[in-house]
Length: 138
Image (cartoon, rainbow, N blue to C red; front, side, top):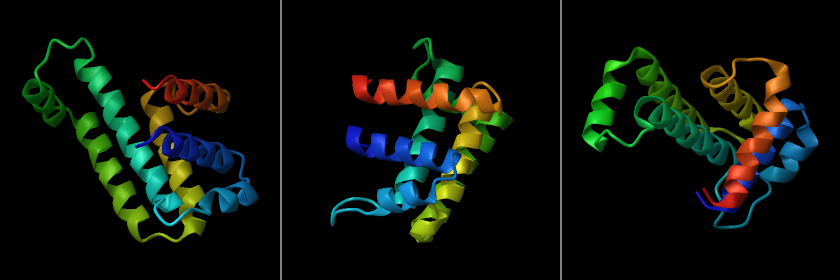
């Protein structure tokens, strides 16, 4: 994903969290070569879940990609996160723009449950941190 796509996805997550349908509708407007908002949000969620799994299971860099994959396949939480990511991207592929908020809230819920837990006070600081990471190019 490009930095602009990541920032658009994060803006959609924030708009969905705030139940701001006008912002979601504005974010759904896209150019000819830009992805639809539901797909963009789901792709971002899938990539973020994969990154979180990689950090949790092999963040020290001591595992080979094959060893990391074996650990991920052996852990039920990792398998469920992978399944959720695939489900979100499959759902989003055929979803209308109006589904962006529901998909974004599902992505937020998954990320929160993987990180700090579903505490409302964690959402905006998490989005700020993710946005800062995207702007740093990491």
